[in-house]
Each structure stands twice: as structure tokens, then as C-alpha cells.
Length: 254
Length: 177
Image 1 (tube, rainbow over the protein chains, first blue to last red):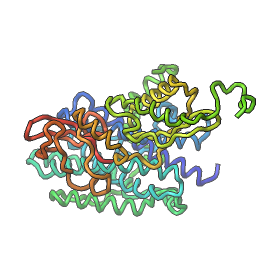
Image 2 (cartoon, helix red, strand yellow; image 1 turned 120 degrees about the horizontal axis):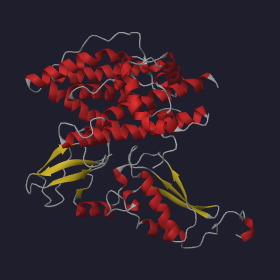
Image 3 (cartoon, rainbow over the protein chains, first blue to last red; image 1 turned 90 degrees about the vertical axis):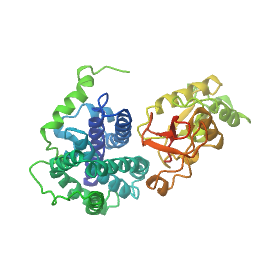
Image 4 (tube, rainbow over the protein chains, first blue to last red; image 1 turned 90 degrees about the horizontal axis):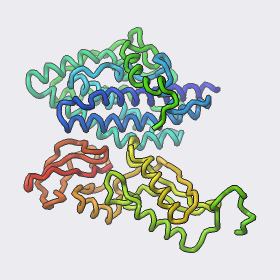
């Protein structure tokens, strides 16, 4: 396997795993969201993300060419083999934490997909162009919730501020990327992580400023990294639930 | 084409007849979206291409949304309808590019959505309509423009939830994408 191919597989796993885990977290709200409209919205966003994850993981599985398909990648990989962002594996918390996470992720996701629409890899460009339309709606909704909660009552503002404080340290992975991603960008295949990080910060700054939410100082690197499979303790618990059925009943079919 | 030209095990393969493609389109016009059973796959604009290849019908179908759970059901329905109409073993190809757009919903499809109580997409799926202000959506019941957005996501990913402030009816709006 050549090194560009290796970089590409890791990149597809970053995209696919992040979408999958974010989608799985959202679906935990099923049956207990604060209002029926919000429940529908959370499930629809989750469904979009799981669909996008399948597109990325299908491609990753084809490149891996070791007999595994997208389902095997989703349901039979252990925590250390997952390449998702640390942000998306964090627990949902209250509605403010859920929406703060969603917004920070959507703002990153949108910029990545925008960059990928111009990829010289036409398979990637096609998946990204489709996902970009969906994620545009995701970001619109999550940024409105950050504004509504941040600029709402004393209680909602207190909660949004607490939510940002709680998850901000994980944004270090949104503001910058790996060397492999920089190499893929230079090859015209991936989105430039430096450009993505700058545009992400610009969006976050503007949305926060619109309701006078203070922008925390840039998060700094710490000992964990989703891109290298070093996750927080929350991912294993999420996977245990998500993977239980296909692991316990490997022959189960619809 | 002579029978001997085809591989013996390729059951049902035959030469293209004059009206085959137009007949196939007619059959597809009867295949309804399982979630909105008044619009056909042709009305939705998800059948992107139809041609004859190696003795079989070959279709290119595009999904509406990446995570649309109806994609497999629709493909199964298309296959079944074509086989019943005498097109043996049609070949379905799923293609993401170019990404599906609500601009491809036919005029007839829009009319059928409205009659079913779903407001059809307003305007074209330009960047402005995706990011900009909410479009002016007409109530599918009383045609009033006095409507308001309740939620950007409705009963399925492709719809938003609206309410008419004249007749007070809540309704789905088929979002521009």
C-alpha cells in the first residue's frame, strides 16, 4: 500500500467515523427530546450523518480491500481503530451541550465538505457535494440554537456558556489537522486543514459575537487525539451499545 | 441480435424493441415514493438515465438524501415493477453525482405534492435559498402566504414543518436542496 493511499484511508475514516458517531449520539435523544419538533430535527440530522458515514466507509472499505465492508468497519472495529473527532463522542449532556457540540462540529464539517467539493478524487467530490447540501441545513439550525440559547433567558445563557466551557478543549482537533491531511490537501485530494481551521474559527467567532458569547482562547493539544485512535472513555461505552447486536448475533439479518 | 450472441446463462436477455424505453418510462411513472405515495420516481427526478445494455434495461438512480431510508425500498419497487412489465433482470446503478436537487421535481410532481397537502419547494436550490431567509411558502390548503416555519426538519429529512396563520393548518414543506 502506498503512503497516499494510507493517508486517504485514514482521512475517509476520520470523515466517516466522525459522521457516524455524531449521528449515533443524536439518536440517543430518540424518545426524550425536549419537544416533538426538536426530536424530529435531531433524528433527521442524525440520519443524514449516518448516510454520509456509509458513503465514506464504503469507499474506505474498497480501498482497504481486506474483505470488510462498511458495516464491518462500523460494527466490528474497536475503539482504538476509530478515527473520529473527540468532540463528537462526548456525551449529549443537556440540550445546550448537544447544540453547542452540534454547532462546533457543523461549522467544521461544512468547511471540510466545501473544500472536498473540489477534490481531484471524483468519488470524494461527489459524496461531499451531496453532503454539503444537507450540512448547510444542519449548520443553519445549530447556529440558530446557539444564538437562541446564548441570547435567551438568564438560565439558557448560563447553560450555553457552561456547555461551551465543557466542550471547548476538544475543538483543538477542529482548528488544526494532521500532517497526513496537509499532504492530501497538497495532492489536491483533501481539504486544507489550515484553511478549514481558519474558516471554522471565523464562523464560530461571528455566531458567538452575534449574541455576545465570549470566544474562549484557542484550545491547546493534550494527550488524547481521535485521529490516532486515542479516545476519551466515552467512545468505548457508545460503541458497546452501538455494536452489541451485530457482535452478539453475527448472522442476524433484517 | 441473434440468440446465439448472448451468453446462455443470461436469462431474459433480448434485443431492444422499438417501444421498450418509452414503455419502461411509463412503468416507472407508476412507481411511487413510499413516503409520499402520490409522486412517482419520475416526478421526483431520481431516475437519471435509462438505456439498453447487453440485452437488459440499465437504469441510473440517485438517492434524494445521503441517509434516505427509502433508497433501498425504492430500488426494490423499481426492480419489481419492471420485471412484472417484462423487463427481465434490469440493472440498477446508484449514482451520487450530480447530487439530487429539488429543481428536478417535475411540474406534475409539484402539483401532486400540493394536492396531497405538502407545499412544493419554492424557487430553485441556489445557495441563497439554502442559506438565506425562509422562502415564502404558500399554504397547500388555503393558498395563503401568511405562513410560518415551525421547524426546519419535518417528518422526513426532505421536509420542514410549517403552519398556516390563516387556516391554522400545520403542513409539511418540501425543502429546496
